[in-house]
Length: 390
Image (cartoon, rainbow, N blue to C red; front, side, top):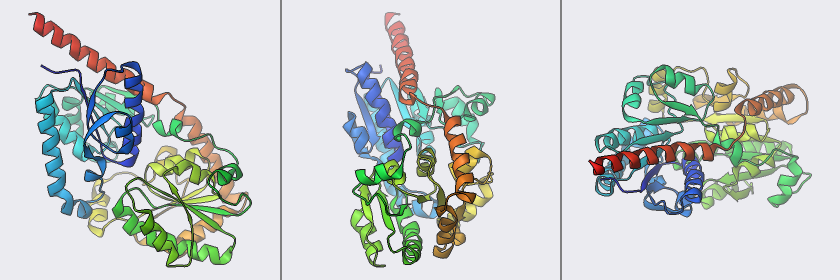
């Protein structure tokens, strides 16, 4: 018989934040609710009994994941064992589909209903997963507007709940106010550099980003650089990489949106941060690089024209994407130069970003997710009550 607990599994910095907002809302409505599973510091702060740290499985790319597979597999088996022993009333699985869809299959076998938050991009690749999702996931909660209809067409019970990033970023405003809040000089030109949230991203993206910053500072000696450092990354590593080129950026503990808001232009690793940058209405250059093997396999499997969320949602090349061999310091610097000056490319990009912000709408996303989770919890409790009454 299931108890009243909720299992929560999130595996990255963004998922940790999204799930923490939901758990906070759930516990506001039902203070007695207990939750256990895997997450980061935000989920733990929201009341999760953390069995594993989200960083245990935070890795991107085929070549990058292979050395970590034994540990990832041990974490997976331990979570299944915990679910079998504790029999939660439901599970909230957040993003990381390679891990969480496998977990959903195991949970279905245990009779534990699954709410999946941040729907996998099966519209872009691996559509073969749709049959498994329809079988193993009780509720699929989408954060991109077009996904609900796509999933429902394929027999999945889906709902667009809004995009949590919209609520998690402050309102866009003048960069000077954000600069003051971060201890930056209000009048100096400012470049934000966002090298990702995973150690593998830092390893591949930080060196060319640092070199491009060095090129730009030679042209603008008064340039100040701000770098948000994601939870789990070593600030000393970031600082040392810049210091080796004579640069001294301001490092910010998280606070990605504020760092972007302080900037004139941002250089951003492809991922959720591109959406944060878009919502802050700051021009950006999107960069990414992974192993040659991961890239080659991805090119075969992924059927989309763009990599960044901003371009995918816009349906056009709104922001430049410098990927793999195109990620060169000179190329990054050149794209940034095009976006510095008012008018021209800068204004065209900002117009597109304003339209995207309007399209994504507003919250309360965490409240909508909480509604879905509570529906599943209550339905499961009712079923359990009926079974015990027989």
